[in-house]
Image 1 (cartoon, rainbow, N blue to C red):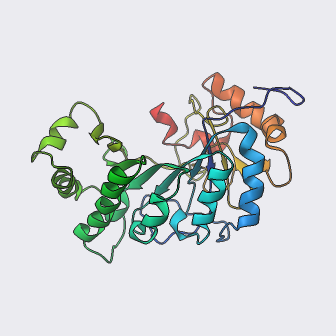
Image 2: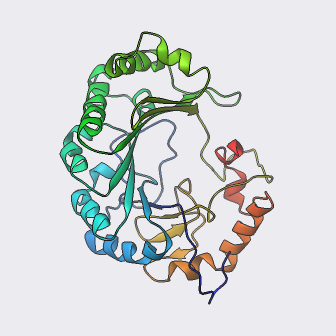
Length: 298
């Protein structure tokens, strides 16, 4: 990891950028955040773009919150394109119909991740078919009219420790088969061999086990862990706070503020170097990391 004053800028495969921490749902798998609700404005977004530009080409609008709630989304995508970024967005899918034309006409947009797990994890006011129809309408238009990648996620499978909300998975798979022109039962058969299935060009279904978000109050602790935090990725919260990964929902591992301190200086700090070096030895040095259920996947 470069030290302060090094001529080489640290490069990340992705920078997670939280453009809002406000959500329109209340998913039972989501830890929420104790931070004040906030919506990023254009001035702050522009400053962050400039700060991260030397370090990545890929922005991920994702940490907490539903990014489609931010009214500045069209402008953010426009600014991202002007600065040469490629953008990934993670959404619960409920607002896709409202922003579809914005997304389809955004040259910066590379991929949209749609978390279908959110349906059963809430007391939804719309039927499953209506929700899925809105999702498939976007996926279909994105496939026909753009080069956007659509990644449909069902991260709600049971584990030995955690029970997922997945009673509707069968109905969802059946709906996807009809929408994609597949044979009945074909998806279930293909998912036996791989939990990532290509439905058609640039359209993917990805299934995974439910995981527990890192929580200092959890009873278990795992010190022998590896994570890509500060190696392949870094996160920036809505107020500019830099965090090592997208699972630090409350900014517990606040490494600095990118609006006040250059990112290179933040990741060269003593705390950041200790975290990076620890994971190089497969050791979690931060208490929050030791409580992360996702990191155990590595």
